Length: 110
Length: 118
Image (cartoon, rainbow over all chains, first blue to last red):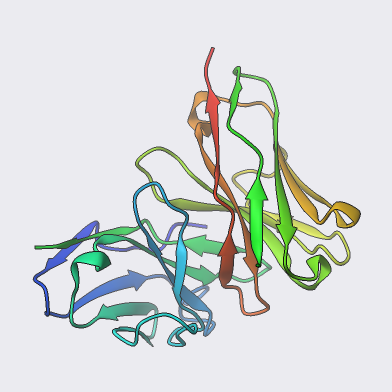
């Protein structure tokens, strides 16, 4: 299956809000409430930020939120902080016991 | 605490095979599936496949079908990923990840760098 589509980069100033989109198809993102989001700092393993489209694991700041409309999921980070600068990846269940990741988005905090 | 510890970096020649291990601790090994995800240098995450540790069933991405084998040893709480017929494009960091029933990855190994070079 093809990778989910994310913008290559987004940027924002401290305190602002940004949104990262993740577009799939009616066979993956649009078919299940199983989109998750991961934050990855350079040289580190990914960290779960959002699961089941919009649920936040314990310990993850409430500045991170997820949503979905049709075949596009979104991650919103409010009150941007310098420590949010990282790569972000979406992932979706894609049916028949498979998964697919997005291409990743580099967030720059200006 | 709950963690995965992966085996160390590997250097392999084109055409050879590599086997990466992922030892779990801090939870009951058979209660969660384990997936493998790779990341080529400067590139994104790529899902490779997974194993139901409880019954040994596996499922692989079509891209790696025929070249990858994921297995586990419940007595050692360890999962393995073997990739054969290596080529330079397989140079990447390989991660194991614990997967919930809702297909999200809540625990990751530290990653294992596999370098394919002649």
